[in-house]
Image (cartoon, rainbow, N blue to C red):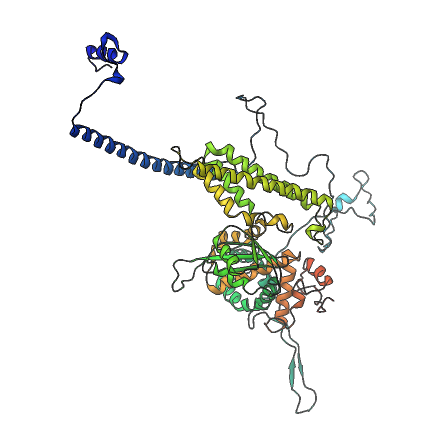
Length: 584
């Protein structure tokens, strides 16, 4: 009222209160012309429209700002925040600003008072005796200089050492000259040449074994291996190894064929995919990014390298499933390519990953602090599902169908089903409440992020609850994701593959090594045995590969390949010949 004339203010106040005989303000009649009334209405509508337009733009900009702020907060958390999801301890009194005293960290390693396991036995290591003696002057009495008597026993101790060195096997083939006069016999005969994995190649089986293991199991770059071997007295060029690897790639084709044949007869799979670089230009393809797909079943881990992430890749692979399978369960994430897979092949049932759903709520809680309590409530409910499922599996007998399990299992099964039902009802209540309030002036009841995570939960619900009626199905896709760790380390250390044949070799070796590890075999022993069999067959795959297929070999053969492979300079491998008899 600073800019209003005092007399006018007094007059206005009197009009409002009806003092001095004036008509009350609410009853004052104002006379306007029709033109003035139309003009005022037009201006009111115009400015109201401008206000609504700006209000809508402001809401859109505010949503974009909230989304960008949430994204920045999420990236900061990933880069600088704590990696653990453990909650901070709550204070005893509500509203208290006193920080709880942190518990002392648990010391690493074996805890005091716990029972140890003693020294680790290593019966496979050879023992080389060393005799340490006293100097001659210390073998006499320091007083009278009389010699001490040597005792038959010794005081023994052990020190473990590793000696890795290259050596040359000089093959001396004996010759024999004819001593008779038979014209049809050869005048000179020579012992047969030593078996070689690659004809006319001077690199032995043990070197190729080391190369393949180091690159595809231990994720070491080929160039780094050459540097290491040079320091050990074995100068070797990367091109020499690359050319040799290209020649031995076809040796593994029969093994991969058996892996695929076996896997497609099984009914539970774990699938995942990740990026992989193949530095070879392909007509019609932009860039060098390929995709590495993994499929793990009960017996086999199989990798496929493909130029794209199209759903055609798993569809093509699973189209060869055994026709006798009535239902096949694929545990996977929510990638739409798998949705296509289930539509194209009706026997496939998708089981989605609860860890990804849990991550949705955790990411939203981190990005939107105002929603943190609401999001973490859902995280707690998901944690309850994991707990109930773990209790259920402790009493599960996989040889019995679900209806014939023990009463204790059925008790935990019912508790799990009730928890699933409560979560479904709560999800639907929030979505219904949001739909009812969506037309109001304040908009929907839910924040857009809340609506997003709940709609995703509803969309994938049928796949998320597959584990309830199928206890053999895990709640998450961690099995397949763990199989990506080894290729992921390789991608980090040597970036990918330099050609298509190299990519094919990488997928084959990943498949073979991970399958061998799945069966508990020693990959070093298994690979050397197979390459040695190829060398003895003239650089070709052996005619009988059953001794190298885990599910085809006998139990004795499996026990043999679980042991370390012992090597010596005079005898390349001390492993006995494979048992080629098939199990009954």
